[in-house]
Length: 363
Image 1: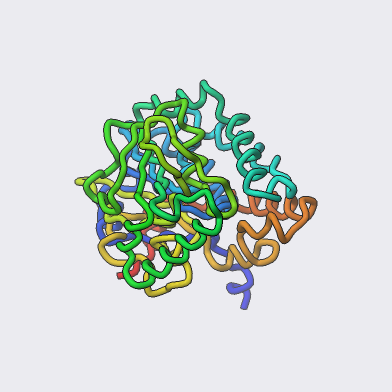
Image 2: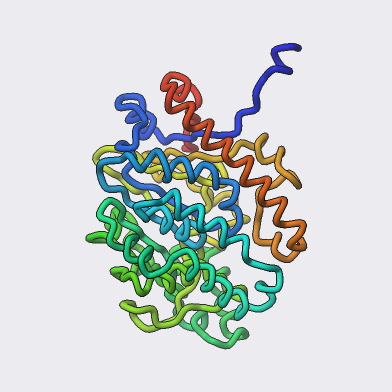
């Protein structure tokens, strides 16, 4: 009984594909083993990773000598933009501060959400910060959005809604049919899109990213239909309406492969959902070779259960909670999230224990 009472709750899960596990075992988990970091869509869910992000990007990966690809959609793109800055730790702090300036009334209409979100970007990513991000030779930032096609590009909510319903129906039959409604768009800062050949489907549109277009690309990547206005005619990209990258790449289902190293994935969950329309379809969850080189870092169920309301933050918090309820809840989640970073740091210092904690990725 005493041993059970004295057991410390584990906050962090580590889920590794077969090749990732082998490479970690042979070479050790060092900053230079990481070749790519991925960030998922998920709105305020990112707050449960805040402390982990601070350690991973602000401290640990800052010591990496080689370049690292960063890929993200929606809030994952915002996180990866912070991570692409040479002073990532400081930028993450500024992002957090400004994220808390969003008030309930700022979500009253899509126009209000759009205006408030641009204001947040302007406050924590000024011209100098944008230039530092896109010109950082050690980080190839890849912001993922979609270019809307047909009715989904309409400025009429009725026709856009009809297009979305048709897209959802088509996706239910066969995910690749989404290419009739949306085109994957990747805004990148390096020499080319990261691991270009691995995810060249959905008629991918590649757009070299300029500092002056960074805000628009980030807004487009998180532009949820009926919640945020679409971003139109982004500089350097073909004309059109651009929306949330999570429509196609909610958590990503891409078999990224490197000759060496691993793909690091700090994530809200221990599982991956391919696209936005697949959230309720457990049969579509990612498994097998797609996860082969990935190391997923995720909060444990016990950690999540210990948080206020027994859950991680989500987009409903903006409407379901008043600001004076939401803010302390989110602050508590952030404070607790540093346990994930501390636990990961401790495991890095104890390679044998780290190997014992690695769970196999679903096959």
